[in-house]
Length: 219
Image 1 (cartoon, rainbow, N blue to C red):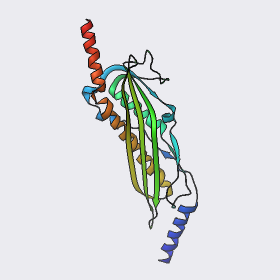
Image 2: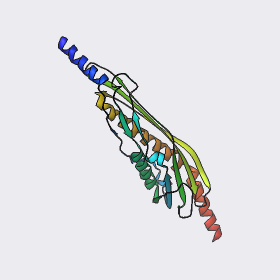
Image 3: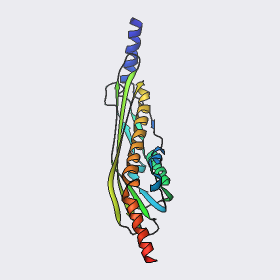
């Protein structure tokens, strides 16, 4: 029993005192594409602009707990979030191009999607156990989205949010896995909400139908 107690003390001391950096790897997702209704997939050219604050999004996370509090968890989100946005747009439209400018211009296609960052929050907490810690991570992403038509007219302005959590057991280094899991879930959910709120809505369909009616009247 004394040996087990000594091992536990050594583990806890290591968790609390030694400081390292554990990188949290976040992967992109195409899962929200499955939520796009077939009747909302449009055969047209569109473009998108993603601000640098999204593309470069990263944060060094420090645990809110005393356990493992000496460690830092660099969390890079930008590339995964940007890639996931692109995958969803490619699933909804036949031709998608990236724009280098936030300002609408000729050649942007039928619609231009403008993505900017509203907020990003992430947290990590460790609760020491007998052999391993209980690790809890959470992540929240809120994006602002503007959609303009080929004439530069704004047809959608809204915010989309997504949250994710992860609860696992492990040592201090496993906090990176919990952060990755929670953040990937938040990316998935923010883009599912993008699909539900914009792609599957009547915003684009109504605009598309109006264009068809005008074309028919012109003929």
